[in-house]
Image 1: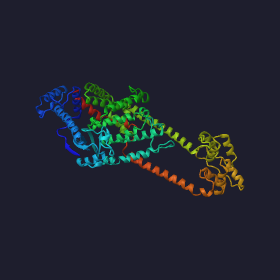
Image 2: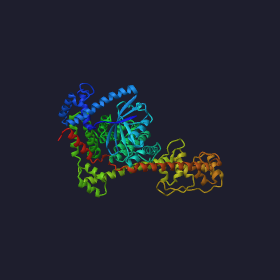
Image 3: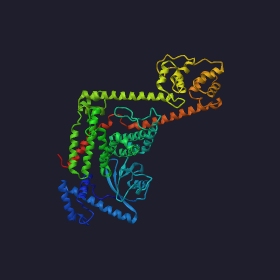
Image 4: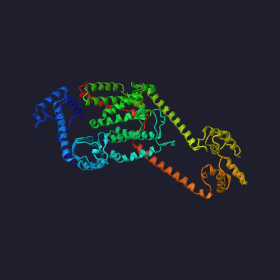
Length: 608
């Protein structure tokens, strides 16, 4: 692998794209005659082209000259690289090296395309004088993999690779712990299964209601959303390099979701929007070859979710102002991409649309401060004022209503979980059907002990009449409690007649072997009943077979569950360490960056 500094000043990337597309539209080939001579300064055809483009684009001739010479050198270099590749098997690659301080350097590398990603990265670390664990390489919008050759990853001669340096201590820690983050996400999503009632993480809609999805979909979507949120947290700190790496991981998880799921939520649209925004802020839009496609995906998804004219949002929320912030960013990116593809008229129209949208989203700073004095966050204050067109009292009411709505939705979710936990605890009847929760509650209200009520319904196959008959034949003292969970089982006295003891146990639905084994092991009906009702003695035939082993198994299962909970708790704590937890976070844009880029591209188009 050999390295050389790219000669000459690197020109403005936005202008470079405009000139490149203009040359393409006019079918001008800078690498052919009459533009190729030994001395570029004396090539009259090149001089005339620079003057014409400077006039037509209303740009200084020196900047146009810089761009045209750079494009010509790149084209000639590509021809040379192909020739070298044919003769020696060595490819010439261009690196765009984005340093941690946001400085950008362009470099050229000669290397074999048969090198693995790992080998290439190791050699590059020595040349850049940057530790191997402090940078990542992206090609064609994807992370370069260590285990495949460059050729297998579609790296071609004169390809441009984006190299992101990560040296800030916090970001370096995040980079080094990227694998740990993925493992944490795996640990947390493993709590999601068919039987899970209280997963550590769950997906809610904008009302706070949990979404019901198949297990595989829930796991993939949850993992994708968690990684996306981690990336958004880095993006808010303007750590765009870290954001891109996390977004790429999130994109892999979204790829495991069915199209129907992705089309019904706006999260995948937001990921594409955020990805393009990060590349723009790194001055690297040209390094994201599918930027236009991503924006189109985002726009289509927003239209499905919000309605072509925001009518769905208006119907659901009564206001679309906060979703308009996302549309500002989307429209602005469409304008910038139009500019980069030489669609200047379209770019101008879209910039004007962005400007008009921005004008309607200005927040009254004084009113925002007043709301914050009530204990609300800056995010909540800004979002509420936008939702109510800067009406202070309406904004406060908006926040109160939102809190109540989410609290009500979460109460409903918790009630459903309690019901599910009860169904899980009640188990199934001997024929395999779930115990009827309504019948169980009725028996409790009638005063029967909860454990015996459960067992009666299980063994009587949910036949309420038979269950009552079985329970009434037992010398039990009915509980006076009217609440599930407070009734305590009564205990019968020891009957000295062994046959009667066996009969009483068998009336609960247990077979004679289970009843005899329980009595022999425990010595009395009370202990035998408890032994069987706890499920300890259901699969034993002799007392000695069950002694100790079942208790050990239960303890092992308990210890295993406890270990899983500890792992999940630690993973959740690490994952949440730098996240913003506001429900409004994804809608909270202060729009300062949007105003900056709007002004920049208006200037490039000489717009007032």
